[in-house]
Length: 489
Image (cartoon, rainbow, N blue to C red):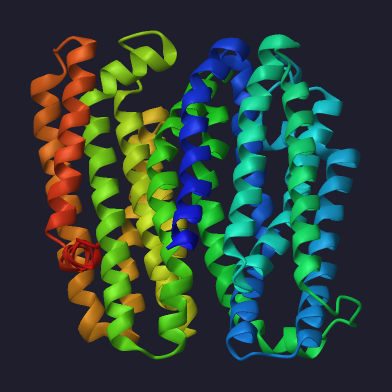
């Protein structure tokens, strides 16, 4: 229970902090300079392709070795086996930023980087702040697999809060320069990597062990499968930010990115539940405990769906009020963008349940094939039909990609098809469809209300829909009954 709580805190609290800080950053930096944040997020997502499933694999392998009570020497060999590729990736990113980062960004995004405050030193620290995260995620995955989940989560929580609030403080009290912002991102990443390294070596009693390349080769199937999914998610998540700078101004691009940072709250809150349940679900699949798999999956799906439905309904009702608070104008032309991007992030988060089944079963098809097809086909068809790209069109295409991936996730359940497929549709798909319809109807009736009334109504409706979805889930009801019955009288 403490692992679950620390996991939720480590994901939800920084996510909420980021949501609160973004409008202040937009106000301090301006929409045009905030476009540099969009470049940073895109480069970060694409750099994750270099991971090729390593972070997922070390967590999985460390968990298997821990469960089988392997000798301490094996853990040292495991750690060193992954350290070499990870540090090579980090070095490659740093060199890229130092030698050609400015030219690469200018060619990829078709933006005048100096006009958005991104000079050559700022570009280097943009790449450096991304590269330094690779060592951190190596040790984070190792600690999680070794069941030191709380330690990993606390390091992540402290570093993320320092990164978010420290960056805002520097912009306000020192100077509103985007280069300074990326310097701070690098320093907080360095702190997180150092703390995670110390914690990992502290529990690895035999640290000076030669890398076990044979063991790494034995899990190459897991590496390829996890890397494949990571590749597809990274490409899909970057399409909108790569397309838009060619069709809209830097200021509009900055607003789009800022709204995306608000909408990502749906992913952060829902994904946190998956992060908390993921180790337990993976362990149940590995042990072939079908009843535990079903109960754990049902619990995670229920909580994630309830939160996703609540966020979506609240967003649909309060969009005008939110955008007025966010960018300072009631009519911005971004109302539909916020709703579509929020829905897309929710579908992305729920797709991670299917990813867990992938990892546990050792199968990675046919979902990646379907997802890969949508990345190519959906934007192409959309562009041919619309003949132009604007913020609404890009948001719609982006959401459609994740909607198809979400539905394709059902194919991952073939190992437990008879038990999990009905659960997927009854407790995930059906509530999402119902919540979308309810939110659409309510938004038509409430968009003319004053801003305070919209926000209050959105919060009440979101809380109501979350309660209904959660109460309808038998696994959640049983969990509540168990804890109420076990309380001392």
